[in-house]
Image: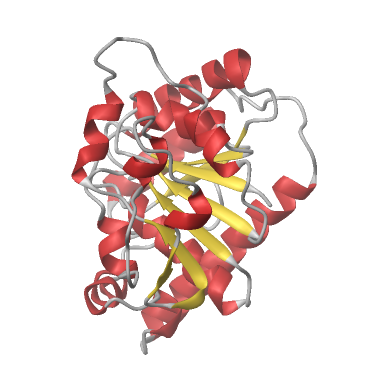
Length: 265
């Protein structure tokens, strides 16, 4: 059961869209997928619309009232093959522990009893603060999402640095699955330049193909359905890309823990 953290340095780059695209790809292949929404904004939870949520990720991670992941998981509106550990705004305080002592293994402990899933996707907060590092400590691989902007290279470098630090200190099996370049417009010179910049630094980690900017993605999310079920050519194109990403993640996890790849830094 591979556990994949989907992370980004900042909000607005489509991290949750990538998480949802992968969950939809898993459902399309009849795989059992669990989405752990650690983002206090809870956007993945909103789109997945789980039914009958009694407990959230915040309840699972608190020490005041222990709740198991099994008790907290809810079936999503996408069907029984996709279950959700819902996010909520109260998670934000776990990003900055008041006592200054990080609970780096809380997510790992919570997921240790989970067995009936083929893949777990953790939608991390849009930062490299405590919740993201906690997720990385529980993961087999980390998928980094960025946009082709002026800050893409620096953001990828910082994210890979965080993965490296968590691996060294807390989780030797962790490795980067790759960098997803999202919302790419091939007709934009700036986007082509920034993609070339990323490729020059991290050619082995930038995943091909990149994700093009398609309105179908936001439309499907607004309707609360997987991109794989949205009826448009753009949706079918993106659906094929996500199927390839899922295959990459599953094969990467099946390869076993190897040396941490830093690309061409």
